[in-house]
Image (cartoon, rainbow, N blue to C red):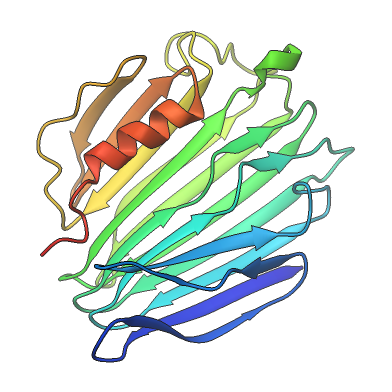
Length: 245
């Protein structure tokens, strides 16, 4: 198992990383101190996630912090023979926090198996946003929808109550994933969840099809596109001004 944990706190002048620990092959880079927030990038010494890998990631944002958590590069899920790889992410945001969770897009290779669980606990007066992007596989290598299983479960608790649940289970052998209700002829799919921030109208972006739904608390946006970069660019427009007061 590979672990990463970090705690962010407000020291009166800016958001700092007060505690962190990690085990190979993952680590965090030295924080980038922006004008309005601190950015932390997760890095890995591995070319991708291998069979049997288990990543356990914890992000704890303290009171009145402003933190952006990102990844170094696309997450490649390599071929599995049986059990595949797993990831668990636990996120908490305390009062007055602004937390943007932007992991890199996932590329599931042929015959890969991947299970991911993300659990998020937010204070009622916090601000949170995340973007989750998956590709159909290595489309340029004629490997679209050749993975065996991809599952991503995201649960958001506000206070002590579950307020948003997104459960994605993709099995190409069970359904035509390129068709209606799934990727709909696109090669990439994304989900943005926003709480405590007014997104306004969705921006116009070439190659993007998107729709927003109001959840019990927060907003969920579904996106289809022909590249991950298009979705990343779209999400940046949606979340423009996220850290501003």
